[in-house]
Structure formats: structure tokens, C-alpha cells
Image (cartoon, rainbow, N blue to C red; front, side):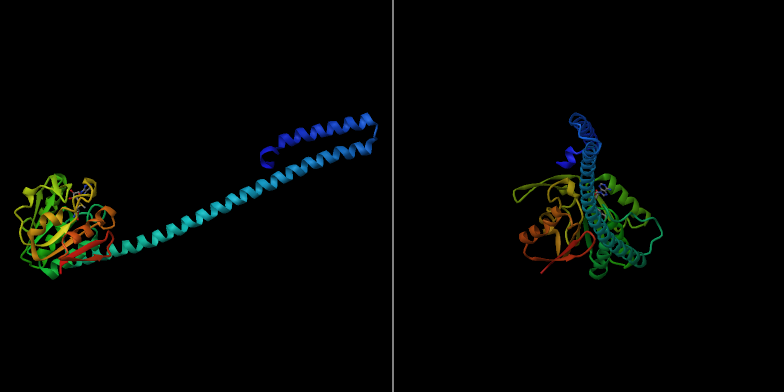
Length: 296
Ligand SMILES: C[S@@+](CC[C@H](N)C(=O)[O-])C[C@H]1O[C@@H](n2cnc3c(N)ncnc32)[C@H](O)[C@@H]1O
């Protein structure tokens, strides 16, 4: 109320009116100079008091706003600090994994970027570790890229008698993957198949997944890496991988499902386990989280 109505201009008008009134009253009543001056001074005093109160309230209001702002700034700083710590830890983990990969699999040509759309170094290291320890004969990848190259490099470096078939719905990306495989001279170990997405009906739902012609000949898959199709291609886009390729898996097959940090992708895992209780899963606490499934 005071903040709304008590303004300098209003008070100036009131005080002026008061002064004029007091002067007029003094003259009209012949009250004498001292009482008239005292009455006039009272007006000025009341005006000053009003302005002082307004100023104090204004100040209190600003202090209140400043306190709220400081609290918000403090919370933001704390959040940024926590995020930075997490990011720093994450980046160090990825650098460490990349250094590990480079030490295990030295290369002499340009390497594809990791993270983002591509698999992160921590997952690539986990995949390479699986290749070294399980020596798969047939690796199938849903979604080609950096992972295709690192898996092929692992097969070559450890003299594993295996091959990789990577499916890709996008000819631009399959082409890029082939270029990398050629530059690293591992085209004999890895094949990228163009597999445009087509419609599949599973459990009463329709999915877009890699064209049947690209994978129906596959048998005895020892390692299945599910990193495509991208989430944007449809709801639970990776779900069809297990129902459609289950019968093509070898009895000792290992399945790796990436990107569990994406809620839509995470939902695929329990659906797989419900549909085939013969599998058990382990979550790898990686940057993008992955699940490893094996037959029990
Ligand atoms: C998650 S990515 C597969 C990544 C692959 N496993 C790797 O490690 O690089 C799934 C599919 O997304 C597509 N893709 C890859 N990079 C992309 C980009 N930068 N923008 C759009 N699509 C991309 C490719 O068709 C790829 O098969």
C-alpha cells in the first residue's frame, strides 16, 4: 500500500498543499508566525517521514529479492559444481579407457570419433575385453561405426578366427564405417551390410527393424552387440533384436545392449528377460550404461 501510493511526487503535492493550508490558516486566524511556522514544519516533517518509511520498505523489498536471488545462485553453483565433478570423473574414465584401447590395439591411421552417437570408450573396452576372453567366431552388430572397427582390430590383434557382420540402416554411415575398415585393412574381418528398416509385427506391436534379407542367413552368433537402430526410429526400436535373432544365437552367446540411460532403451531389457527367462543380465555401470546378457 505504502509502496504503491507513497511516491515523491505525491508527497511533494501533499506537503505543498499542507504548507499552503497551514499558511492560509495562520493568516486567516491571525495565529502568529510561530504557530503557523510550526504547523508548516509539521507538514514537511510528516512528508519526510512518509518518504523515509517508503524508502525503508523499498529497501526491505530489495533485500528480500537479493536473498532469494542469492539462494538461487548458490543452488546453481552447487549444481554446476556437482555436474562438473561428475563430468570430470566421466571424462577421465573415458580417457583412461581410450588409452587402454590404444595400448592393447595400436593403430597407425585415423580413428573414428567415440561418444555421442558412437559407442563410448568404456563400452568399446568392455567389448574388446569380451572378444579377447570369449574369442567369438561370429559377432553381429546392430548399428555400425567405431565399434565395428575396434572389434575388428581386436580380432586381428589377438588372432581370433572370427568375423563381424554389422547391420546399418543408413547407407551414409555404413559407407563411413567401410572406409574406416578399409583404412585399417580389416575389411576381410568385418562386413557392413546395408539393411534398410522394414516393418515387423511382434507381440501385437509393429516395429521398424533391419531388413530380413540382411540377417536371415546368420547362424551361430557368439556376440550380439545391439546399438541400433537409433531411438528416433521408433518406440523401443531395439526390442526386435532378440526376438528376431534369438534362433541365430549360439548356445554360448553373449548379448550386449547399449544406451540403457535412455529410458525407452532401458525398457527393452525387462521385456527381453520376460520373453526369454533363459537369459540373465548384468548391468555395466558405463557412461551410457549397458547390459550384458548370457544364457543361465
Ligand atoms: C548408436 S549408432 C551406432 C554406433 C556404432 N555402434 C558405433 O560405435 O559407432 C546407431 C546408428 O545411428 C546412425 N548414426 C551414427 N552416427 C550418426 C549421426 N551422427 N547422426 C545420425 N545418425 C547416426 C548409424 O546409422 C548407426 O548405425
